[in-house]
Image (cartoon, rainbow, N blue to C red; front, side):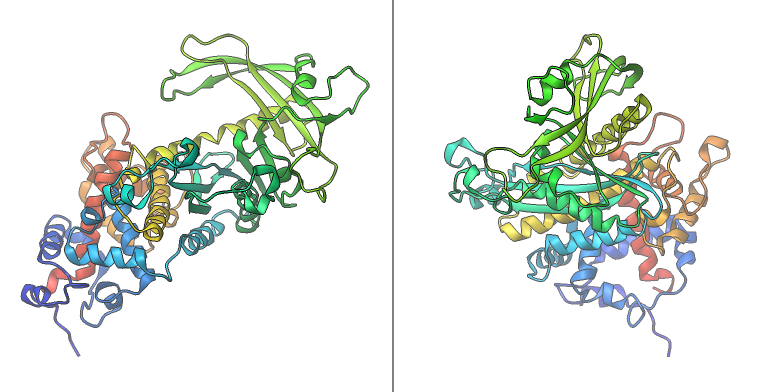
Length: 503
């Protein structure tokens, strides 16, 4: 039996909750006019009874989530009304976020499962950090986010993601896990009277454990984190298949491993060591800091940290053996403080080459700072979200976190310097559309042709950048241009799914 695609009148008569709007038909027709090869590449699609019917008419929560992800990636922002584009899709997204079966934990596990498929045999750096989201939407403020609680502490949502990055190339492999929670205003017992399970600091231990589980097929796993994660229990309870690199914050008590003079404290011990090497490196530009060349002095020594006298579980071992790597910039830069890192690591360090490796792995931590910037000011403006229901807001932050990873992957892939594949950020069905659009966009000169192999993420990044307005001649496409291109690509993709050649 042959089914004909419905008319515009049929679409107007569909359910107000899940039906397609007239504006969608116009967008899809324009996509078919400009990129007919992309529509042809998808073949016939039966809108009434075909395989895509579930995704078009009454999608279950999983498919609604995929639809929200596509909207977030294609046109990032924090306004559900703008993301939906129509009243029907706005309601669809709102119901998804409020669905009791939808949780940030479930989204995290799904994203982690996809990342696990990409890490086999690789050296992987799992970067974890926490960012507070001070939410400023009107309804969010009325709900208590962003309000000042007792003691002047700003309450709000906190996001703790763990990102998987390939150690050699620095390519973002995906999201390992994430935790999103509302700190609230509950009265808490003094810190030293609470167990780690009752403290927010448990997130660092859980992040390391999740990295060990999700990335189990990797050749080597190194969890990297900044000074906030410097607490004894993280070192004492790290998974057996995980190495740690943590920037030291606490001047801890140590066991004396030699007869050399020492004050029994971590920082005094390393400060008394002679330099063991130097190397030159380039410090990349950052907000408030220009790119510069620097010479770094190295010191390193094995240490045995002693269990804290107060607050630590007495069941923990009395000492934990680590290596302390001290990195100091020799000269004072004109526009900032000189670098001084004290890094505690479980990696074996016996010579300067191994010290360099530890430093290079720690420098990958900048990836998560760029990720937070994409989620906040450079992309999604997540802190302007105007969702008053706490659980719905948590779900929205989780969805935006996953979409931010996709945006970051595309920006990284633009130069073709990583071996990321199309499946790392796109559905398999997107490949023929991307190839058809690429052929349409290519010009006569070499710089107007897609230089990357089909099936690679770099190939897709070139297509998305060209759709966003990049000519191939000037500069490099950044997050904002990629977002414009993704919005246009999603319009084209929408046209292909409707099979409008029969309308």
